Length: 601
Image (tube, rainbow, N blue to C red; front, side, top):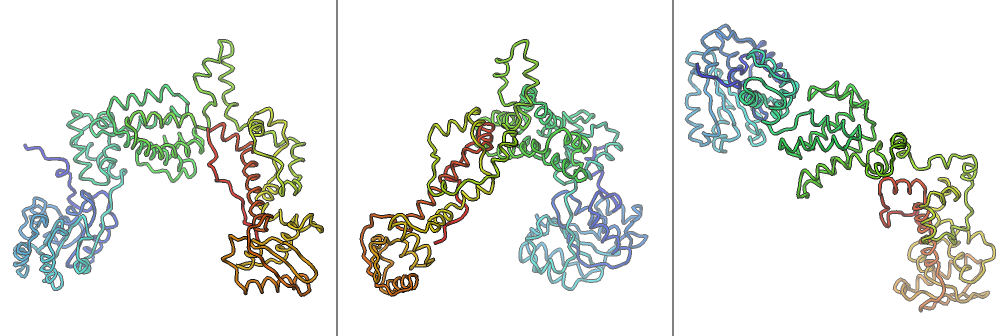
């Protein structure tokens, strides 16, 4: 007897044999049982999800000799002939090979004639989106006014290519991709019936490679049975499909958790010997880490897409959330590195070693340094001290009672006006030296840091509080701040310096670089503002030239720069920032530190 492939042999013969697509089957069952039938049905979905199969079962339901129902007998001549593809009143058309309008007209010539033997004449048009526009126009007239004995069953993988006039005249059913769980369950029943032994892991590999298509899964299963000589194993199926088995991915995660670099590299060697695609391997690792992260936060939300739900839950308890998130981020960023690497295996090994080195549980010193520094007597002690090396650098220093009391004292405002601390080399080296760090006073608390951030506002406030300015420059800066003028007038005032002030006159010099902003109206406005401020009539004389004194605008800019420099110094010398830099080989991006607020005029 000629061998029949599994995809044809195990094609469902009734709705109850279907795997998945319950949302479609429920509608069709109710319509058939209640005799609420439409003249045109459109089934959409990717290849191998059951579009044509459902259409043929539907044709059986319509023409079964026992009557219209959702459960055809499967024994009458109509059911048998439809199952064998020789029922005269079921006209199947492959639109991909009959796209011309002449083909469509020839097909529809006999629509008006009654069925020969069946109850309905059923037109099953597969890949209907391949028809030409003229063919759609020819079909449209029949869909608008169909004879009562005709039912159209249309199937397509690309419904977006169908004219809206066709879509509006059909009941549309969108078939979903089948889940790996559904595919595995169906393949298991097929193998039991075929009496073929199989490992469950192999079925999960096939189901994942099928990408939601049951027909593709049955085809791959057929191929796997032949490749494995009748005993389907996970390792052989992985070799056949070129996909890494889940055991290798789990071994990588276990080696990372155990900080076992040797096992990690041995696993990569096994992967290389089996010629797996490293990008596919990385995708599987990302998928595993994603499921582990879900298991840590929402254990009930873990899917069983690989048949390893319990194993995932167990791994989630062994890893910390920080480890999982770090591994995922390194793996995700590593895809870009693998694209430009000249050796995919080398890039993948570096990616795994990066996970190991930067893991929150990894030792601070390298294995080579540990081996060289350890003696036969103290090797055991060195291993015991590894957990201490990974703790946060000196976290207890700020918790001492004396330090805590110092933290609550905000620094005086003078350093904000004239910063005393400079970012010279001795200060930086002292901040990075551990012993020097212990001797220095603790960093200011968040309130003090906030004062640094708004130093551009605080500095003028100090000047304002001084009742007797030390010189004419400071006096003018305070006057401009008291006036509080904005816009162009405020900008002009801020770029002037005071030359002379008497009982009835004021002489100012405007920076020549800002002379384009000046006109007579602004001059009268400034004269009015000064007269109102000093409560007496003043005559303004405004000169335009280069200025040799510091203007209010220059003063604000200097205060802003000094505050920014102090904020950068405070940030760079912070003990926690230094700990991050030393532990993770991090660095501060230049110009990334900025003050929190701009100075008000």
